[in-house]
Image 1 (cartoon, rainbow, N blue to C red):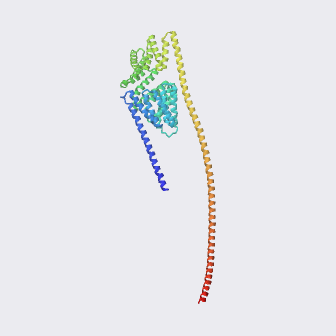
Image 2: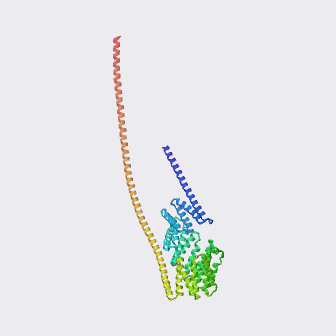
Image 3: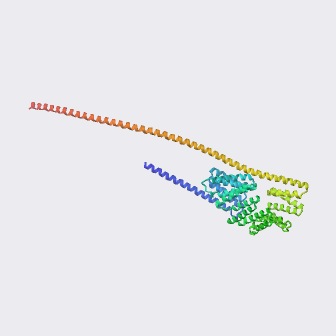
Length: 519
């Protein structure tokens, strides 16, 4: 028995050792692959390499990622490399990888992986299909909110990503002029960024609040928010970027209030960062144009206006900045209309109309129709006026349609969540019922087995008593037999003793008689 136990114990030790070795090998293999993936991505980010070589390094990293098991590590690496493809404007690959990471996340029930994948898919659609972008961002937000409602995952692990999703939702709401919703989402985003300890997107969030406040004509609030954006930018090393953006936006706030001189001061403040604009000439040209337009609105006879317009337009044209050129042409048209040169004003307004499908700026297209209706002849002017009215109505309907779509997405998502919750509750009730029945069945079985066991014990006890009684009777019988045997032996010994002695005595007498006769 001891020998068998020793053999079993030895087998257990060997199997445990082999299992631990395999597990250790798996961990080392995963770590090695993870390091190779990160190394390939780092190589791809070397500035000295051409784009083709960078893509080769990324493809090498992707090949290793595919070989990983379906785990959260694979999801994280897919998401990480997808960002690299996005930076290189390979948007289809970015979408493909995030859909794959979403599929794996669902299979392994990785909530954070699912939310982040939905967020990345939303990023793909945000400049293509607003409703698809909103749907994906909203799904991500729902998962993050679920995690907020009491989960073992620490808030710091997903707070920053949740904040990014919220600010994306806020920007989409602002686009469709749902300013109250956008403001609420932006405030929530700031709270998430502060909880995460990563303030990278806080200046962007305050900038969004500033834009919303300007659209809602809360001009003082707008200025405060833009100033906060500039202050927060100092803590993340982006002081110049947000100083340029913030001062430009404050300039637009004063421009909206028709305080053109103050607007010009802030545009000049934004333009004062010369070293910042060395490799950002496109932004410089647009700021220069804003300055020129503010001067034009302040004093339409200012001789420097046309010079600034020309300078800005030349830079935009050299960079093939169609958006900047479209804005320049619109303001050229206003300028020449003021100068009563309707032919030139019409030419520039037509350029804006032609560029509209490229720049996707319906607001400028609307203004171009208005200008064309004012500088064209009567019949043509009427045609442009009608187009202006139709486009304006179309834009209002489109905004309402998107607002309704967003509301429907929220409703359908919430309804689906409620249905899932109801199904979950039903499943819980079913599980509880099954567990209850199982417990009752188990309890009944235990009681039945206990009764059977008691019966068996009673039977064994009675059998034992019977066996003891039988043994006692057998023992008693054995004693009686032994006693009878002894008595018989005694009797036989007495009979033998008496009989033998009598015969011996008879023989002796016979011998004595014989001896006497012989003598």
